Length: 264
Image (tube, rainbow, N blue to C red; front, side, top):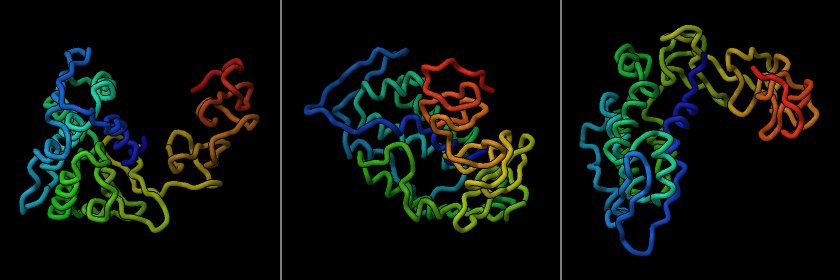
């Protein structure tokens, strides 16, 4: 199994797709979710988003990251997002109010995204800059309703506040452990639960095994080599080998109107 950091973030941040479009006047609106979602638009905007206190001088150590992460995102969502858009995420992720939203994101973060990071920091596999993450979160909170709402800003202080120290081929337990390789993407590839090996994502034309998920995101393993997803008429083995909107029919990528071949 391959644990890819960008996939983890995307899975947690279904919430981040919402758009910030405040109504003309403050108002309270209720959306038919279960439980009902009631949003007070009088608390929208930058002032509301800034209600999460920024980190203090100690910054954000690993054990504090997930709690603050969930609170900041959910405060921004409930302050900045239209209820109809928020209701989509509320239904799919399963929250009906801001505290539940924050609790669910925190739990997901601790259970998957940052699972094992504290041990990696203690054992020297990850360098963690608590003060750097403090500056990262402070800047993100100060942005109010400006994007991004559902992920850390793509800034040097955020990207550089955790540094993997495990070289390619070394043992890893989290996606944070692996050291960067210039010009390539690195992944902690898991062959068993709890422990993996730092590997470089493979590029177009490089050999691959489907079950290992070795290809760079956006590529597929077709014919035992990493390739772009197949276009109409190109050889395939499964629906997943084909570009979006196509299916694998009789070993060739075809429009969905064609009879479907069985996938994996």
